[in-house]
Length: 584
Image (cartoon, rainbow, N blue to C red; front, side):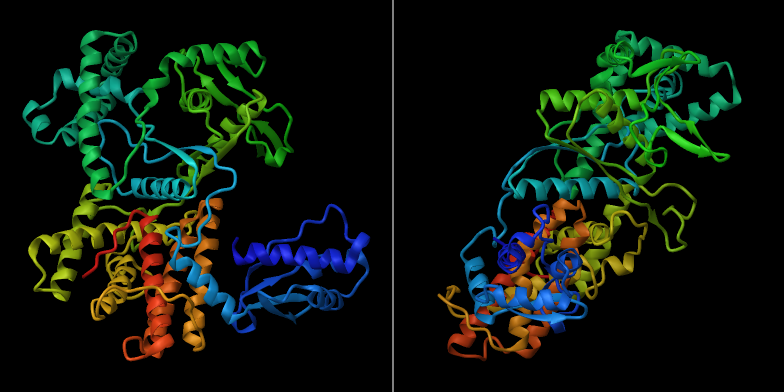
């Protein structure tokens, strides 16, 4: 059990002892949280302030009585401000918890009490188009959530819902047959297909007779035409090959690649069922789902305010021409994942602009009587230094492959400057770890809902909130153990006395709290901030507390703190898919 959970339980017991029958039966003790200012304690609670008025007591008076009734074996207590209860964990308790972590491969992190089957939908690029820098957020956040959920004991199904169907294929099919350069296709297939799409799209704007021809090719594909299906399959195959190279470099893997086409046969029956159930109805030839009045207007995803009135914004699930939309495919996808994967939770790691879309989709599921942990894990944009969407100098979208290649190239220079004598093969592996790690951590250290600036110099800096800083911290810790004789053996007990020792131990035992909280909020930046704080605390400890020059119990304790720091850094960064090299 984590320290906050234990303190929360003790607090609940004390409140019951103090108030007896006066304690409201529906009152839930708020979770004990990390103190905002470490000078006043390690954890704090506002429970007395929340209850005081309801039981007719002064908050500080109630806090005082609760403190007297608290079990004091874990922490000392004090009152702060209008009635906060602050907790300061006893040094011997911190030492005991840190000691337990040394003998636990999970480093104190408990598995979920009620494991779920979670489907995580992330990355989802389009076929026949290269991945660009904008795919960083969905791809890396989604992979991290999958790693965290698996580590916490959940069954995770990762699904790359690629865009492999739709109107763009009509243009690609026509272009394949009429203007595709076969030599370019063999040399660089994804770029060749993208060029075909761009050329045909431009031609359609210049020649109005071309678009119907493209639509005819799409109709033939949807009707099962053998030639068009063969071309379509080739497009998917070459796209997957190009995508897999990027995913391999990022160490990202998917259980399924069920694209939009996988649900094509389910769309028409789905619309018919929604019509039959009265959830959808025809409107101007299209089939739509309107508000059913379940929500207040300001919370209803099917309404928008216009000129002081609430007007309908329905979800269109079949166009007047018979075509289907993303909403139809997403509903069919939810059905499949619920029925076939038996999913308890389905999370979509998709940009914030799609918020209204997912609110409508999830609300339609409510109308259908289908419930679950359906979650839109939204995120902001990646910007250039000019605070505009990150582009090349020519104004083109930046290729994700180019970003990875440049990160590794820049990391190679950093490694060469730092360790010129390192063997070439090791140097290449370290540059890969540093370059890819820099991209991932730059993403994951941000609040996912915020936009952030893509800055090469900051990403690869050996100081500050970066992957190279944390990797270098790990290297520094491990270098200590290369200087000792024999293998490190964890001591039976730790003895903490110096302030820097206590600060480091305090942070180490918090790891078990941070990892579950990171998944609960789907906010990897919580774990990233913790790991950065831990690395800083280690450097302060290392400067203040000699390790190898100390002796006896002190030396054993300090080596144990170093060992534990390295394990937490390695495991924590591993949950981000970031490798920690032993040397840099």
